[in-house]
Length: 230
Image (cartoon, rainbow, N blue to C red):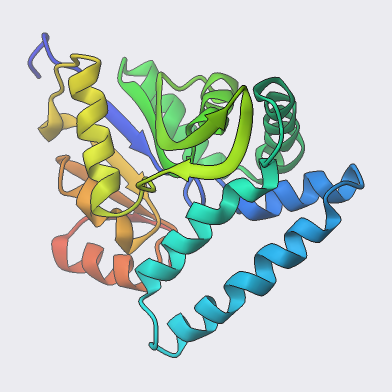
């Protein structure tokens, strides 16, 4: 290893570090606090047609996922930055932490003990990821940016969504912005979806974690390490 370069351990969030789903975390918060109960129903009713169309191969699966991700901020629309932080903290502690994959967290801890820098890389809101980053002791977080107007979340992301090829570019841009010197050949990436393949191509040690079938098949062909089965 080049002592002047950093080894990264890059972790996806939904499906990789946790068994939970972002929309479910916000839904749980709204239900337990008896607020915005119509938001979840509206969110699903307006997105299920795209899900069905994607399953029938009438609509691209990648477009379906992007649409769900782009519209997720509706759950914090109208909240101030301070109030949203309270929501993020509650969801982290009461929804996501109990659903974290212990085996994957142990791997994360092993990387930290080896002196590697931990990166959370996800389509989730960067504001939320920063809360999670501090909670689990990661070094960096890279995710989707949210639109804010007069200290209030507008309910929209600042496009593009951190997803697919763009997700890999987000990471590269972050590294350049922070002026980090990375040993990519010695770095690792952990993810569960075929749409994370562009990130895997950046590192020397990609690991498919509880992968979907397409990623599992790709991992078999590329001889990548696999944790869990589809």
